[in-house]
Structure formats: structure tokens, C-alpha cells
Length: 495
Image 1 (cartoon, rainbow, N blue to C red):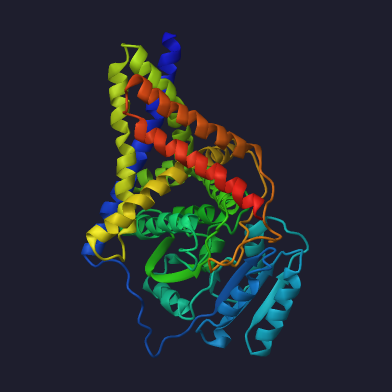
Image 2 (image 1 turned 90 degrees about the vertical axis):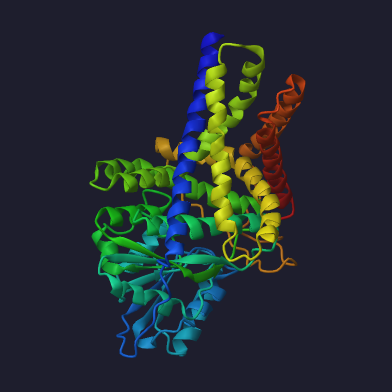
């Protein structure tokens, strides 16, 4: 029994330690962001001089079966305010359904309007999105390559607000914009996604950029210098996050990513739980694959300690889900050890201190949430319930994401599963009858339901032992897994 207790407490404390150190790295990004903000060091929108020489820009639109949003995408990109002779649009179409015909009609319409636009079809969908981007790159006429996923609707002035930044330094390889959300208020789930993404774009990206640390192209709504992509080795399909992979390979070769938070590219958030899960699976597994591939190079490089530290936790950020699952599953046995044994108090007390990591993460998210909001008390009143729900759903998705991360770390390969888009911008619109909706419920969903019951049992044991130290944690876990289970089943039944 001694060795079992030792193993449980060691794993529990180790996982909490990783979460704690990760949260310290996030707090440091808050500090760097706020410091740059106070000193007015964040980039402003460029002023284009009268004699500005407009460079040739190729806009790439990687598309695969986007029946509901592809016309909206093409129309918005065709409306970009840029000299027509300096603009090329590539619709990288790997579709195998009616999307092909829709694209052909839209391309013909805009070509007749004098837009240089082409529908590019590959013989086979080799390399998924990365393969399509590389295929288009090989024939692109532009000096700069802008990329938009199918769920984005760029504003007409997007290129004028981003491309001129490249003139500041020839080592700027990427200009990345901030994402906006056209359906943020559609549901609780879209509000929570917007909450999390806004914190990433306001705090993380600005913090990394202000600190001179590695950051990442977010896969869309950004522009690459073509020579940077080529110098870094081009697009690769050996991870599910080709954007993170190329970002790090480019920065390891001395290129810079320039982040502009004042330029916003609106996009549609996934509204159904299955769509959120597919997106989370790809992001978390891809991050694990990229860390497996590139972290050794980062650690061997001549980068500063601070940049190596942040790059390490950036690449390993998806590992936090494995740590959450470990601490969550072991928290119930820890409750028994706390109350039925007497020899582990020092280790238990140390592990309790590391729970502060969750408090630090709340501070991190507060700094993202309050951005562009006025009135402290009003903002706090909105923040508390949304933060509570964000933590709950974040924890509820932990098992699903931990499986993806584990597969990434052990090198198990799976296809690129895109997130289905539904063209949902109004509360009256749903996804019933949507042909891309995944109507299967896998075994992980059943496990999520059982985990909700498991943590409810933890709540019962807290009252049995009159030990409430882990009560907030178990409330969040039981609610989170219940919500994820409920929404997965409910959304699938209503499809």
C-alpha cells in the first residue's frame, strides 16, 4: 500500500508541478504584454505613402468540401482593396462534392470582373491542407502569400493593413492578424471559444511578440513572405499543425513573425460540440507532433534562455491536458490518502500549493477578457460566470484532448480531419441536415459521461470526510464532463 500511495502522490504532484510552471510562463506573457501596452510599443496600423510600390500578393484559399461557406469566402477575398494587377487568388480546391461546381461558378463570375482568380484542382489530396498550400506555392506569382481558411471573411482593407509591415525589416517572414468572431453570441459554446481565443490573441501573441520570443502563424488570416516559406523548407504534412511546424522552422532559421492585434479578420466559430472536438483534436495532437519533431532543435539552438523557456511551454502546451487528466483522476484517491493516512502530509501540502497554477491561469484569462471592455465591476460580473464555464468545459474536454496529445507524442498518425463549417451567423440557424456533420458518437463520449459520475462521487466523499480542499476542483470536473457529454449527444441527435 505504501508504494501505491507513493506512486499516486508522485504522479499527482508531478502533473500539478507542470501545470504550475506552465501557468508561470503564461503570467510572464501577461507582464510582457501589459508592459508593451503601457509603453505604446504595440504595432499601429501602417500609413501607406502616396508613392508606395504595391507588391504582388497571392491569396491562397485551401478548400475541401465547403458547400455552405465557399461562396462567401471567395466573394470577400475578391473584394480586397488592392490593385487588381497586383493580386492573384488561388482557390486550392480538393473537394469531391458539389463544392467543385460552386467554386467554378464563383471563379468565372469574378474572372469576368477582371479579377485574377483560378480554381486549382490536384489529381489527389496528398498532404491535405499542407499539400494544397505547397502545390499552390510552386505556381504562385506573388511575392507575398496570404492564406484564409473557408470560415473567414476578410475585410477589404486587410492587405493594406498588413502587407506594408514587411517593409520594416527584410527578416519579417510573416505578418499575423487577430481573429474576429461573427457568431460569438450564438450560444454559450461560441462565447466560451471567443473568450479563449481572444485571450490567446490579445495576451499570448502580443506577449510573445513583445518579449522577442517565438510565436506562431495561426494557420489563416496571415501573410507569408514567399522566400521565407521556401527558405524554411516549405509546407510539410508530417504533423496536423502545419502552421505551427513551419512557424518554428522559419524562426529557427532567423525569420521573424510580426503580430498585429489591431487588424482583425472575422471568422465563424464552430457551434456544435462534435465540430469543436474535431478542431481541438487536430490542434492538440498537431502541437504534440510538432514538439516531438522540433523541441530538440529548439533546446540545442543558441536562443536565449527566456526564448527557449517560452518556446518549450509553447510547444508542450497541449501536454497540459495529460497533466489535467492525471491530476483529475488521482484527486479522488488523494482525497482518501489525505484522510485515511498520516505519513504524507508534507507531500500533500506541497501539491496543494501547486493548485495555485489554476489561480494563475484565471489571472491570465482575466487579462484577455477585460480587453476592449469598459467598467471594472461590469466586466468582473461578466467574467466570473464565463470563467467558471470556460474552466468547466476546458476540464471536460481534457480526456478527449489528452488522447489526441498522447497519440501525437507516441507518433501515431491519423488523417487531417477538417472542422466542418455550417454558415451559422444567427441564432435561428442550426445544423440540422448539414451533410458534413459527424453523426457518430464514439466511445470517448461514453467515458466522458462516466467520468462525470466519477467526479460526482468525489463530491460525495468530500462531504463524507468533511474535507473540502478539492471540492471546487471536483465541481468543475463533474460539471465539465457532464456538459461535454450532454452537448455531444444532444447536438448529434439534432443533426
